[in-house]
Length: 195
Image (cartoon, rainbow, N blue to C red; front, side, top):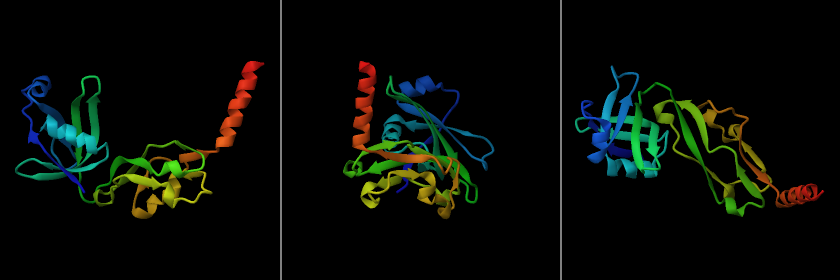
């Protein structure tokens, strides 16, 4: 389900700092078929709700009142100290134009694995056309054979879905370490430290 986010064209004569004080978040929309980038502003409550559920690479429909624009999130500039979004940047999607983006990798049911799951990739960078963009890659350990100890990007077979990988296909997504080996390593380290 693609989220819709209400946006307004921003008056650039008004400083971003003043807009933030007035309850707005600033941003920009750009794209190949646009003559120039469009400065935007969003209600801060809407923007915070949006980033609570969406990350970089997420698809969105920007509701600009008179028109709706399909876009993806290119950047979220969030100041965690002030708990404030400094900027939200979007790229307009154009049918037939490949776009560079990233997709988050999430694990489910990792607790059932016999061993220690070490996640090595939290996102995968790729290029694809707008109708082939990925939402989230979910790796469910209930669906993976217990014999599998490593998974690489190529094991996802994303090229078959029209995805052009930017992340190297030999990169490891996860590795499962044995409990016993981890303990033996600790013992060896302790013995070495004792000497």
